[in-house]
Length: 575
View 1 (spheres, rainbow, N blue to C red):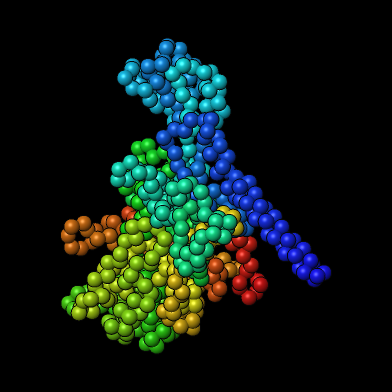
View 2: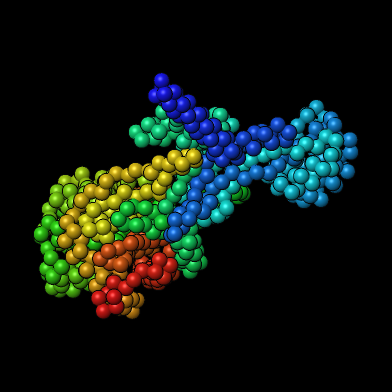
C-alpha cells in the first residue's frame, strides 16, 4: 500500500515537473525568443502601419575575433502621409512638417494636397523615430504618421557588390536583387506568419530534420566570412589605385586558401545600397564573379606546376629561349621580343617568359595540359554563393591546334572570372588541393538553432610536393625579381606573380596594342598560407606592365594583414 502511495506521489511530482518545464519553455519562447516580434505586433495595434514594410533576416560580417557586425538589417521609422480631404490648411501643415523633416519639397507637397479625390498621399518616407513622434504630437488634421520598416546597410558602400540590395523586380514584390540579398533571398525572407523558426517550434515540427537534411527553411540571419576591417582596407587599396591609374574596372579578392572563405571582395566603381541615386546600372553587377577576363602571366605558375607535377620539368630544368616559338604557323613572342639563350624554369617565372611555358606545353602534350587545367577548375564555374556567376570561355581546349594550348599556358585565349582564377591559383597555396570559394558561413534561426553552411570537399589537383616546389619558385620571384628584389620582406616568405595581358578587340579578331589587363596574385606565409590575394585592373592608364601598377598595393595589403592578424615570422632566422 505504501509503495503504491509512493509511486503515485512520484508520478504526480513528475507530472508537475513536466508542466512546469512546458510553462518555462513557453514563457522563454514568448518573452525572449519571440519577444521582439510580439512587441512589434502589440505596437501595431495602436500605431498604424505603412504599406512600406520589410520583414527579413539580417546579414552579419564576422570580425577576426568572431564578433558579428551588421551588414544588412531592418530599420524602423515612419512614413508621413496626408489625406487631402481632411487637410484644412496645406500651407500651415507644410510649415509645421518641414520644421521636423526639411527634405519635404514644398511644390510636391502642394501638388499632393490638391488631390482632393485621393485619401492617401505619401509626402515623406524613412522618417526617424524622434521626428515621427514629434509630428504625431502636433495632431495636424489630415496628417498621418505610419510605422515603416526598410532594409538598411550600416556599412554603406562597404562590400556592396557582395551584400547586394533589395529592390522591386517583376511586379510589386520587394526582393533581393544583387549579391547575397539575391542569392539567399528565400532564406532571408521570413515566413508568411512573420516569425522566425526557433528551437521551441522544433518541439512540434520537423524543422530540425529539414535543416539536418540540408534543407534551409526561410527566416534566418546570415553570417558571412567577410571581415569588415580587411574589407575596408582592400577597398582603400582599390580606391588609391583607381586615383593613380584611372582603370575602367579594378577589383580584388582576399581569401583563405585552405577553406575558401572570402575575407574581402571588392570592385570599383561601387555603390551605396541605401540610396542608388544616379548609380550607373553597370556598376551594380559584381565583376569578380559576373565578368571574365584574359589574365595573362598569372597563369604561368599553374603551367609550371603542371609540368613539375607530371615530371616533364623541374625548377632547375633548362631550355633554349630564342625569344619566339612557332606552332601551327602561328608565332608567339616574349613580352620584350628578346631571347635569353639557355635559361632555367626559375627564370621562366622570374622573367615571365612566354616561350618557357610554351616549352612546357610541348613536353606535356596538349591532352595532359588540358587535364591539369581541368583539375584546376578553370573549365567550370566555382559555385560561389553569389548570383550570376559567369562561365569560363575555354573553347580553345577543344581545338586540335597546339597554338590554342600554348597561348592558354600564358593566360591568353582563355577567359575566367577573377574568383575562378583565385581558386585555381589557391591550389599552389593549399598544398595542391582545390578549395571551394564561399561567403556564407552560418544560418541563425534564433532560439539556439543554427545551421553551418556546407561546401564541397577539396579536390587534389597536384601533389603537395609539386605545390611546394612552385611556391619556392614564386618566393624566389619576390625575393630577387619583383622590383629587383627591393620589396622582399626579410621576416616573411611571400609567393607572388604578376600578369599583363592584351585586351581582345570587341567584335573582331586580335588584340588592342594599347589596352592591357593588369593582374597580380600572391600568398603568405608562403609555406603555410593564411591568405591569398588576387588583384586586377582593366585598362589602367600610364603604365604597360602590372609590376609597375600592382606591386606596391599588393605589398601594402600583405603588410596590413601581417600586422592586423599578428602573423609570426616564417623565415627560419626570424622565428
